[in-house]
Amino acid sequence: MTTKQIDYCIELARTESFSRGAENMFVSQPTFSYQIKLLEEEVGFEIFTRNGKGAALTPAGKQFVTYLSNMREELKRAIEQGQNFSAKYRDNITICLMVRQALYFLPEAINDFEKNAPGVQITPLFRYENSIDSFLKNESDIVFALEEQTKQLAGTIVHQLFKSHIYLVCDRNDPLASKNLITDEDIYGRTLMVGGGSPALLRSVQQKLISSGKIGYFNSPDHDTTHINIAAGKGICLSPGFLNDHSGQFAWIPYDCDDTFSCVLCTHKTDQRRSLEIFVRSLQKLYSEAVAFPL
Image (cartoon, rainbow, N blue to C red; front, side, top):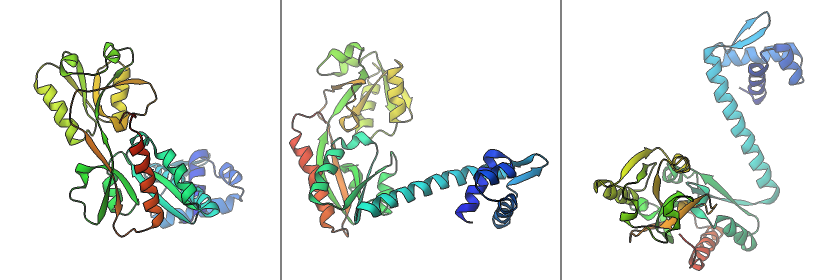
């Protein structure tokens, strides 16, 4: 299967016309039709049904083209990244994190790093789930994690980064938004959004509140859905400070709780690149200097 055949197949699925598809791909119709035929022979099933007006996807073809389209987009991005890299960089460091806001100072760290290590690119890789698995498969050089997740990891170096507190998140027009500190009594009678891949520590705090019998709760599948529910007035939530995007859309008020999340960076023991060490230190320096920054 060639990239041309993939492109021809996607174009025929879009136009449902051999003549128009060939015209759009700047080839003759016989060439276009022949390449589609070769592709079908290779995969071993009929992708299109032919009729007098053109072609239509078979059920198997519809599923196949969906995968082809996604694969083509990934290939396009890979080529673009390769072009960017080859034009300016001689090395690359990939850092995996769950969401952009998990490392608020990442842009500043990249800027600082490039002054000290020119020619090395930093590539963020976002994995809301399974970021540790991705790291262990060597798909990333660094992974942002909670220290509790790193206890059983072999072959890694754990770099301390910062302690993150628990905050109550609510709509800015909510009466709770005017408070400087939230206690359990403040949220009695309210609905608490829970779930959404919450860390073990947060689940423990949530369960303690729910077991009091003085609050309601609503299961939310993920962090983004929780925020939508808060904006819709369905409830409030408790969240680690490292998920605060500081956009001002919601009020984030410190919750009266001594528990904190120990946020760390993990690198592979076998990766002894000087540039990797410099980048980790850049992030550590930024967070150590952020004394008054809410985390």
